[in-house]
Length: 90
Image 1: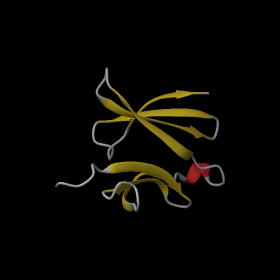
Image 2: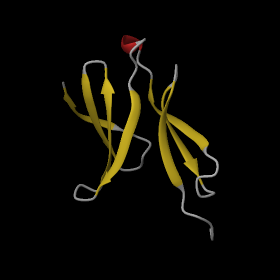
Image 3: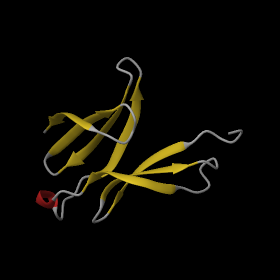
Image 4: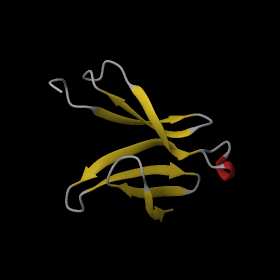
């Protein structure tokens, strides 16, 4: 309340997966909130990296895309925590 709006960031933590972190001080510091996509054993050595997350206003969803071994994975979410896989492009 009365502070900066929260900033959400996603990053890959090696050996863990895709992590959601947040900042409430304008991006000076971030705190990990949770692992939203855990590492998958079938991708050891070639884990998905560097998710790109953006808001898609027409569908009112957050969208995530990243490269996973042989192609691009597409996901959507309404809350940035629970993600549903919606497509794959190789």
